[in-house]
Length: 194
Image (cartoon, rainbow, N blue to C red; front, side, top):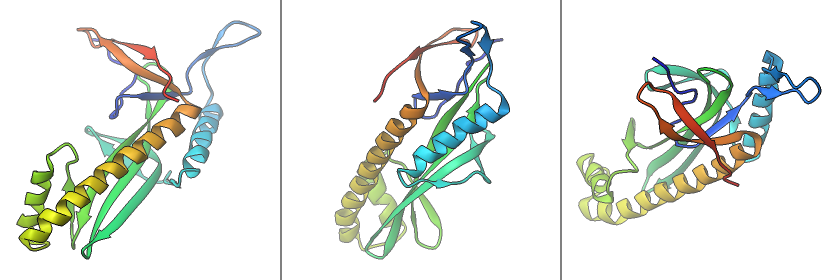
């Protein structure tokens, strides 16, 4: 059984360290370890320009596997004495056949002694219900603040991911999966998102 070369949580594949053709010999060249490190240093440098912090000592758990982190960014805002947060972790994945790709995981939560995940794909009424169930604010304040908080979380998530996509696109090759065959093989198309 075959498999896809790349995997991505966010649809767009930010590939780097791909094989390339040598200009002089016209032979296919696969990047060495130091070239891969150079690619990752360049990516990290660009991420630091948009306020990401290096995070090369940690690993992130995604889809039953651990991947090396590259950088992270945390954003938080206080609403009525409660802290609402967005964390973005950027990590690397090895391609199955060749190359590597950069991916990221966005996590929203609120903190009141313990972390409570926020599902941005859910309806705002579900979020307000969660606030009421946890007795964070009184019912009226949950409704009023809940809408503002949910809007802020969504707006920040969109703004941050768009900025991150543009930054990663500057230093990687961007692809999207256009087809997957029954044996698991995939076809990718190069895209331009800048």
